[in-house]
Image 1: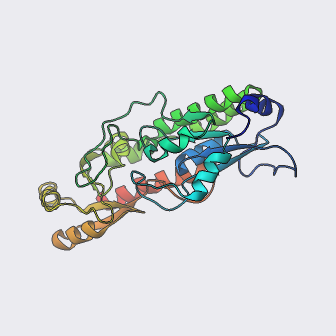
Image 2 (image 1 turned 30 degrees about the vertical axis):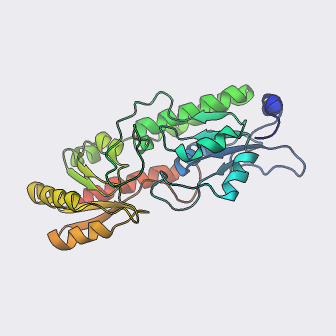
Length: 297
């Protein structure tokens, strides 16, 4: 928002807000531009703002990606940040690439990580970045519900007139976030090896035994020591399958599969996709549960 931050509260109170998929703004009508940094934040924001007229919710990082640690803002990204009236971030260090750009913007920032217990980051051997906390906390239903509540609170503070609608939408979306106890019991204690470091929260919520997680990127493949460790774990635990991320590299996983005979499956970090609202998130999470059950069952 290089724009009228002093007048933003007045604009928000006078204009009805709308999420993507709502009524298009009339020509010449002022619109509040809400910018969500990542796809999960975008899904949760469109769910919370559903049915409220006058806001345009946009996604900053729209390309298919597995890791944002080394993301570089484009000219298009900078224009979106400059245009934004409100910016919603995942938090937890995921948007470190955004720090300098946020310093140039006077748009209010809503941090979706507020109140969430962050786990220590898993190791990043062979990488040139270091993160104290694991920022992939949207991968549990409990944390997703907390993010929805943070978004509703943040938007409600800026637009108190529609605060009740935001809270109602948040509660409705959170009600859909229910674990199937049969699925969880079937996964309890199963050994998990992933070629992405973003499934720590997911594994803990599902009762999986996360033996090893490495973040493999192009140009930063697993070390010989890591490969040896993974092969030994596969043999020790008699693991039938290992997992890559849909947008990540699978080179090392395929090499290990050839050596050990394990299958390679894909899990989804939900960093890209189609659609708005809570449903795409639910479908991706359900597919992850199904994939693990099939691979390790």
